[in-house]
Length: 406
Image 1 (spheres, rainbow, N blue to C red):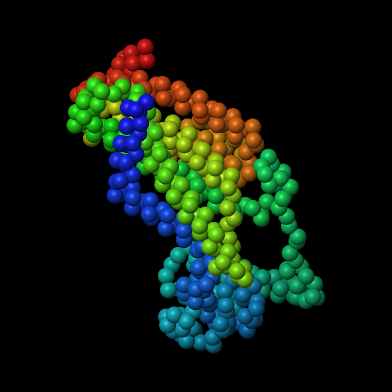
Image 2: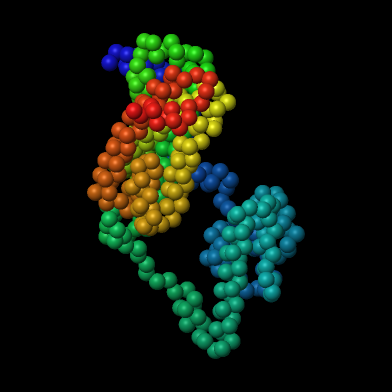
């Protein structure tokens, strides 16, 4: 037990004292502190650029500011001359110029971007609306009826009839918060597993390349070395995540003070999701850490570290991208199936929990499956690690791997 603790302590300190790790931790804490308060900060400073506006040159005489602003959500300022409008934009007084003619419109922009495409679509809808009004008028429809038809807005509500905690509630009220939880926390899981796995990979290969492992195995069992490395590095990454969670909690306590009296979107903290984040991170890290360390023990050169680590990296990328794609329809059958695959569960099942589509029994099954997988992988990893510590200069063959499990 003393040997295990010594290895855990050494690996924890070796990783936690690394300048890159410290810098990344500080950066994540700053991001976690700022992100929840970002809407309030932008609201306080008017978006860091003043209130947005568009210069409008209407050569048709059809439109007024209220009509334009109902389709383009920004302040509309009318000009009689295009050159004057363009000059105002170049002076920084407005963002873009919309020039409306009888047969269409022209946008004058300072730079192309996705926002320009959105603006073009909004301007198109504006002119289409005007053409429909004219069409109704031409066929003799009363203008009051035209307004009633074109401006009709039905009452809408999206009810969640799934298995999550939001059953029966208006799903649109919780969707954005749940989406942010799933997206951000899945990214945190991904980065933590990638960083921890890469550290284990390079550490084990370096120990073999420098012959350090030969000295270590004479005083410590390979299984103790492997378990100590996994626990030590996992504890360091978990400390990083807990520090980030602490920053988020602090920020969410401060944000209501900044947003008091403001109509600003805020994200409310769900404590259970933070608990699930820690649980799924620990299970996921342990699974992948054993794979990384075991595979790293089979090579003796740093040049081979990248190639040997491709398998777990591909699995991590697959889990992350499955989550990102699955967020479009978290109730899809394929998402449910993938969420029960142990090596992908830390991402996909966790996202389903955030989105409220995972039943309690599904979460329990996933956790049990991951624990069982950890038992199998740790046993296999210890066998491979033990064999790898005794092999230098030659890559193990399939025969060697099979013999290691006897």
